[in-house]
Amino acid sequence: MKLRRYFSMTRAGMLEQLQFRLGSVTTIAGNLIYLVLIYFLWKSIFASAGTDVVSGMTFSGTLIYLVLASALFSFMEMYLVWYMGRDIQSGKIVLDLIKPIRYRSFLFWTQSGFLVMSFVMTFLPTFLVVYFLTDGTIHLGVNLLFFLVSVPLALTINFCIDFFIGTVCLYTQSIWGINIMKEVIVLLLSGATIPLDFFPDTLRRIVSYLPFQSIYNTPLTILIRDSMPLRETLTMLGIQLFWALVMLLVSDLFWRRSMRVITVNGG
Image (cartoon, rainbow, N blue to C red; front, side, top):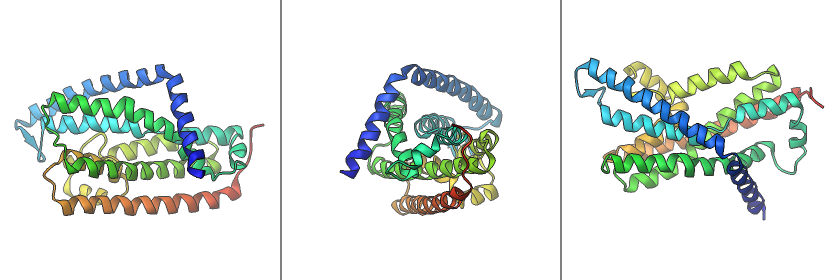
């Protein structure tokens, strides 16, 4: 019965997403413009390098990675920080807190419908287009199963980071600047904008100890590199699981502590 209530919230989110189809079309159009820009940008980078392989990646491999990274970002971006900030500033958060469900669970399940629709409307079509246009360059095998395990872990980490930053609004009453800084850090250090293979060795080692690379780089690496040893794949999934558990604990503890300073400005 409890799961049925949660799934009803997922269904409501899916229906709501269908009511705002123009927003989805605008997102897709914006992604297409972005992909055209990165195509010419990376084409120029490889042309200036004077070689077909840079940092172990070819131009086609880099482009496939970045196209799928853009689609994965569109799928996993929940705008949770803006949602929490708006509700804290307006006072609506009080109504959510008295609901017979934990606030963090309420946020996740209300966002889950958007995630399902984003996956179906954004990531899946992009993946299929890339797969057929590249004549099956992406090998479909057990790596696809590992990818389907990796994505929920990446979603969990991404959600917890957003929830942590959204909670900061209880102290600042404003979230715009902090969220922009968070977006820049996550997109850069997760491999969403620049593949981590292009990072200097020292920086790449530092990033490997941070949770951000588990959001985009790990699932994309598992999906694209069909020749990756099983042990390395399981290690990457283990690191993802570790960070998912850590972020769940840290974000929950920070929320519980921050509840002491909650104020209501709206009416």
